[in-house]
Amino acid sequence: MRFAIPRWFLILVACLGAAVGAPAQLQLGPTRVPLVPSEMDRLNRAIERDPARPAFRLERARQRAAGGQVGRAVEDLDVCLRLEPDNGPARSLRATLRLREGDVPGARADAEAALRGNARDADALATLATVQARAGENSAAEATFDRLLALPSPRASAHAGRAQLRVSRGDLPGARADLDAAIEREPGGAEHRYRRAWVCWWMDDLDGALGDINQAIILRPTTPEAHRFRGVVLLRRGEWAAAVPDLHRHAQEQPRDEDAMRTLIWLAQARSADPAAADAELSRYASRRTPPDRADWPGRIIAFLLEETSEEQFIAAAATTEGDRAGAVVGQECEAFYYAGAKRLATGDTAGARSLFERSVATGVTRFLEHQLAQAELRRAAAPALRGTEATAVPESE
Image 1 (cartoon, rainbow, N blue to C red):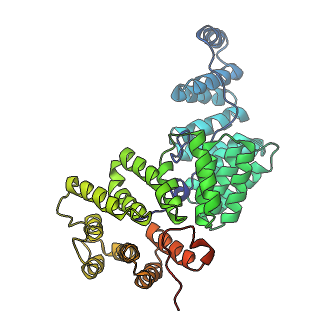
Image 2 (image 1 turned 30 degrees about the vertical axis):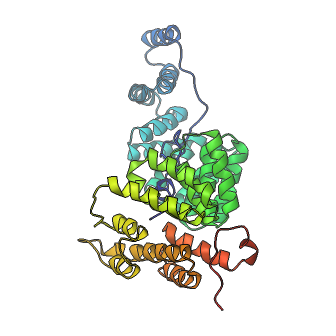
Image 3 (image 1 turned 45 degrees about the vertical axis):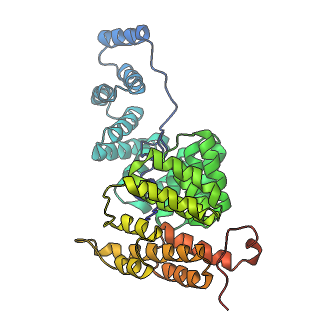
């Protein structure tokens, strides 16, 4: 199963969303409470009396933006800037709103203009960093974040934005340091915990990953993908039975992932000394699965786990492709070697299992979960102290 870094890590947008994992605009400036209707009416009348006063237009734009009327807020800012082209706060706010509306060139132009007037404008720096990251200008974006974070009392979201860029160039320790700072500034931010859990995962710090994902779920139980992530962290740790509830929950909440979850549930149940239950549950799923003939690759994995096809046939099938999916072969082989090893381990053939796990790791497909699970099996084999606390471990070669 391809278990890649989440999309938020790859698109490198300097943003933190209300729904974890969903890209959104970086939080810019203090939250404003929209004016009550009577107060807005007074502001409208003030503009009617003095339509050439930029300050009134700017204030109404702020209130409209806070109330979700982004388009009308931009209209007010357009007027304000025609009246006063050097109005830095108006330019900065329009940059923010243009970015929110998808006008990236306009947002860049406004942010750069605002910074020419005030190089320490935090909102303009945040907007420019976001624009640069979306354009793939990662070095420039990181330098802009550096400027933003050099200001007094930087926001947690700025640290999180720079963390994403650091991940893009492989600086996981730097990304973790930024997320540590984000959590220190905003302890209740579930999204920061979730993101740091991912960094811990790729740094092989499974204790850290599990601690952060547990906290993220406490802070926001509906965090998308969180239960799947906790389930696979538990699998890598060899806590097989503990992983099953999270994998079940994700299978129920995300039917598109059910094939992958069902094979992992089989694995967890088989490794937690309940192979009969593992086979029975997977068989029930297979009977209602579409397509029923198991001709697709996930279906072939299921057929192998249910002993409807041999290990030799299964591994041979991994080397075949359908249509233009030639690039999928190495990933399929990584999965095939791992599940073949897991099946052998369930039957007590530890030496054969180790050989297959080594072949799975040798594919080099590090972004596949099975590659990481195979590595975990080999590490447990090399740590005798763990053997009494895990399900059957693969012994070291003689």
